[in-house]
Image (cartoon, rainbow, N blue to C red):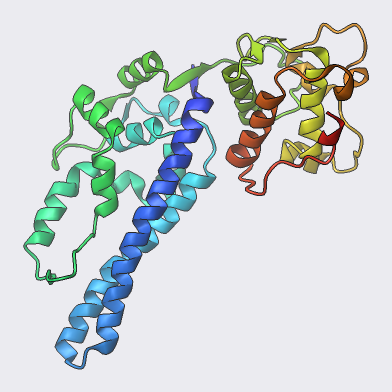
Length: 322
């Protein structure tokens, strides 16, 4: 059994987390730059060396978090880690609760990074010779913030917080899965029933599309079965035109760049269409309106921003026909 995020919950949380981390990183960068300024203005060589030493620590910290935030933003939505290990760290579980794929952080050292070590680090810095005065050291400010989040507190309340001396792998994966399933953080991912007919979209994109349409109550049914469309026939046609107009998903359109006309059949791999006429015949927005138009627009916006990382907004050249 494999698992996925519940997208409509995980994606806003991931986006908010990234925004918060960026803001906190700016605080660290401000202090880093202050140390550099002190070093440049200092005439005493010993003090200059001290300021440069502080600058080096903060520069390393800022660089690490810059890379981590990029990895978080660009990571996919797979939770293969839950299939691969009998135990996971509390940090990996924490990432999942924040809508972040732990595998994406492996390359930048997150698996050697423990929130449980923060109190020890803080004690060491309090005992160091970093000047106080008007300068407030904020090193580990990001980790302190994460430790104070409701997701981390919820985890340590259920599974306990490891000491500095315990092994990294300290949460039984199956226990975490059962707990996360119950609270709706993750969902099981079964093979699509129509595997003999190759799906046109990547599973990540299809699952997100299903999750968003389900959230907006535009469809009913499990991902693995045909989705029951709850809107009008021309609302489904409207969705197809929105997908085409915005080149969604990007990979499918890149692989089929020779095609300029709308593909009306891709969506029918997933949706149980009961219309009596071809779907393309129902693209008549001005005559009878579009049920769920706002919800479909929001779905496209989320796919562009959260799946494709496209920040420039939805194309709406044809929407004057509505």
